[in-house]
Length: 200
Image 1: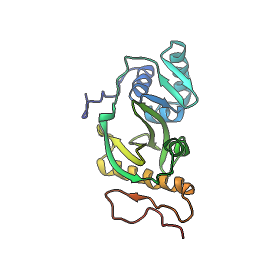
Image 2: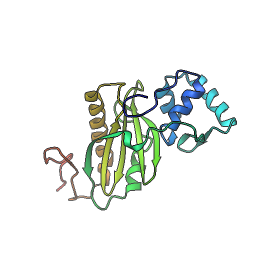
Image 3: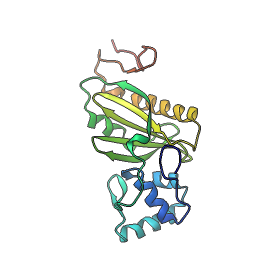
Image 4: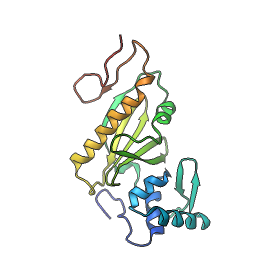
């Protein structure tokens, strides 16, 4: 086991590595997100996913691929370290916010997929090279950004830089939701300066 109680990536077949990756995410992972995470050749990955679908271990849907195997390891919510949060205006609906961000690429961050957990839904991104992951969720009117607690792939300062990059990009993507003369978003724990200015 690695730090944080997360099983290390298996060294075996691509099929095993796919099941490990999907099992750790509890949701749907885009093909490109899986390819990046596993460093797999696209054709090899496509063949392996089709094989796992035929065996009833993987399901393909609108949001990507998900594991149907109960035996895959789980990263678990306790393995996430919160980095920052932003209070959202009360008139922003959680599903609208997540819908606006789902599937998008931001700067050096590439879309991975959706993680479904009891009581919350998280969106996941990774760096272009597949190293380092950042997650985002909305709870009780607050947008929150996390990195995996297990770490080890990149150092914590790089993880935090990715998290703040996602935060800035997400707020920028949500800007059209703001009402004229409306609310500015504030980063909790940072100096009280708006992420973008109030409109007059």
